[in-house]
Length: 164
Image 1 (cartoon, rainbow, N blue to C red):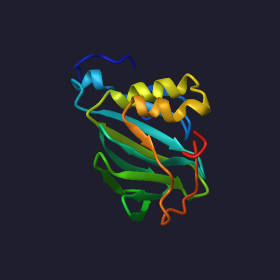
Image 2 (cartoon, rainbow, N blue to C red; image 1 turned 30 degrees about the horizontal axis):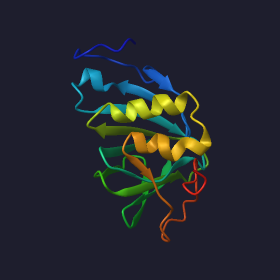
Image 3 (cartoon, rainbow, N blue to C red; image 1 turned 90 degrees about the horizontal axis):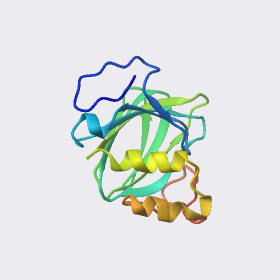
């Protein structure tokens, strides 16, 4: 389905524009251009053992809704086991990470507000940003890759902050 500015839209389960990025594919369901920049909505498929490394988003709040699967999430200093039906809100400035702890792919809805910046980051990553440049790429979009706090045992999934 074509993205329209400020118009109503209907997308089926497998519709949207796909962005291949580390940690699994993202399907853009609602683009910032449709919401006047208010938010962006992605559906993500996260392979078993996959996820996001510890990071801090300085410009956006993020809300994750687990549709299918099992995730362990680090939010601030708390580790949360999130199963289908769980919702996790992460205010900007909060360290967070997650790992799919299940044996099958997990499916999540990921909302960022305000919208747009995260879309640009994912598009750049999908174009194949070099691993050595990842810290700089993320920083351009207000996201800081950080080392895992001692309580986080979810492992270092793509990319390790210490590699960048």
